[in-house]
Length: 158
Image (cartoon, rainbow, N blue to C red; front, side, top):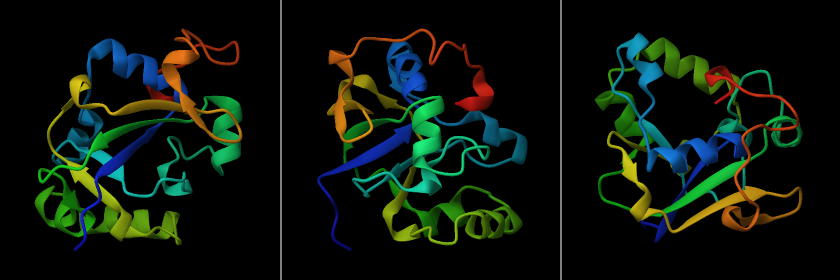
């Protein structure tokens, strides 16, 4: 399999500031409720795809962009990343959840998604970006919001 030079972590624009404050991309601890290994999801896809939506309440990229924004962090590809297929076996995920994920996103291209079981330190970030409605832009040139569209968000949306 041809390995890319870099890979993208998609998130909300609002969440980018929290990631930078923590100093690292952290594995998703919420998965512990399902007894999975905590995971960071990354994609080789340079354009947003709806399987990256941060909340099931958002129907598409535009809706999330208008509500909590779109953000992404670019990191170099690493041998520590595992394919989606390997993740389904190594993570402890229930097969029923894998089926639900596939049903929720019928156009999901699992060959583009990779997983990391370790945190990724900010020192490894190649770029931090937000979507302005037309293109990805340097996050540092925009500033760091403490609220988004006049509302404060909790972890449910991140």
